[in-house]
Length: 136
Ligand SMILES: *[C@@H]1O[C@H](CO)[C@@H](O)[C@H](O)[C@H]1NC(C)=O
Image (cartoon, rainbow, N blue to C red):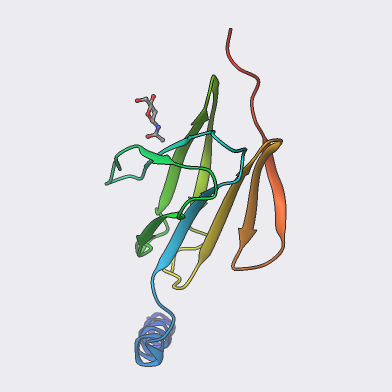
């Protein structure tokens, strides 16, 4: 019991400090269309408690951003469908890593001709997955 209380106090002060720092900010997932001139990228995303409207992103247009907090308990997740032409790709664009909410997480997705690239927390931009072949 004593240990549980110490544990809870440690967690409480961790969150208090995090709040005090105050500059970490919300989490974001964003999408940028870099496929090709004239190609429109369709993006629609769903989380446990949110279904967002489909967005139509022009080539090299403004990024589409989803801004959110993580939930306590680790259930924050975004599933997204990207579509261009006959190609559709479902994938998990965001997954909460731990029970404790993080802040300031960034997932920047770049849709390109050969696939979907990801830069995590402004790190290197790497191929995350190839486009699935169009369904017959
Ligand atoms: C996106 O919209 C399509 C068509 O309405 C739907 O089938 C799909 O489940 C949606 N994807 C997400 C992640 O909400």
